[in-house]
Image: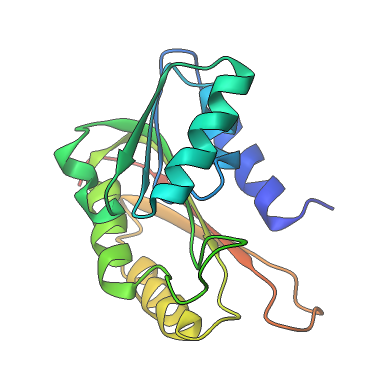
Length: 182
């Protein structure tokens, strides 16, 4: 059985092509950014922490990828940087091994998700990894779930992939596919 993050990658990989534009809305330590860089023609990666950008830049340089634009800004600015994308991914929560008080926020996350739903190509996909076992995580989890439940079924398909017998707030995956223009 795939873990939720591996399922997120498999979900996106099915449609990634060498000419695709991809968005990593929460750069973190650059693992998703590198995953996307290996499969897409252009990647835009966002984070508000310089440490995330530095770690990701090192990871990409070591792997030899230059098709990535690292953006030191919140994901809520996504539509200022790109007008169309094939895939996008979020890892909500905090930067591992960093200040756990710096977390993704419901307001900016919802703004970014809404923008990405608009700019996704038809057939495009969005993967949202929801980590909620930290202070404030439950509020963001609920806000994101409430939002994706309202996406019109004629334009989007939304699914959840999660383990249900795990303790300690296991992360889960929300998968969104755009069926037609909004």
